[in-house]
Image 1: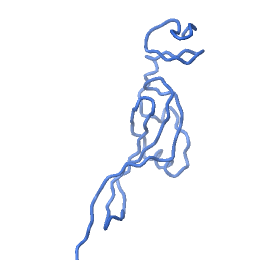
Image 2 (image 1 turned 45 degrees about the vertical axis):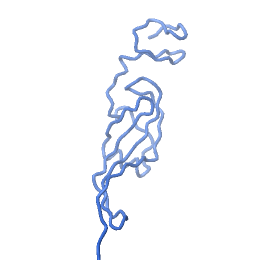
Image 3 (image 1 turned 180 degrees about the vertical axis):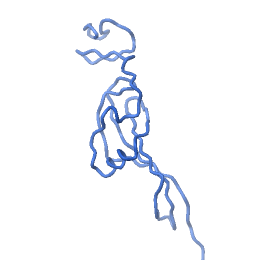
Length: 122
C-alpha cells in the first residue's frame, strides 16, 4: 500500500471590494483582499491549513500590502465590509499628487491651475 500526500500553498481572493482614492497613486481604485496559506493534503484532499496571511491589492496601481491577521479574519468571516485609510499598509503619498476639486483630474506636476479645466488647484 502507498500513500499520496504533500504540502502546497494557495492564494484565494476573499469576498471584499471597496472603492477608494489610492494613497499611493492618487486615483480611484478598488481594494481587493487576498488570503495566502499552506496546506497538507492526503490523496489530494486538503486536511489542514496553516500560515494564513492577508493582503490588500489596489486595482489602480497594483500596489500590494499585508494587513493584520485580525482584520483579515473579520473580512474572511464577513464581519467587516470596509477598511479605514489607517488600516491600509500603504504610505501616504498624497502630498505629491494634486487633484482638481472641479473635474477630478490628478497630476503630479506643481501646477497652479488644472491643465484639463483651468480651475485653480488648492
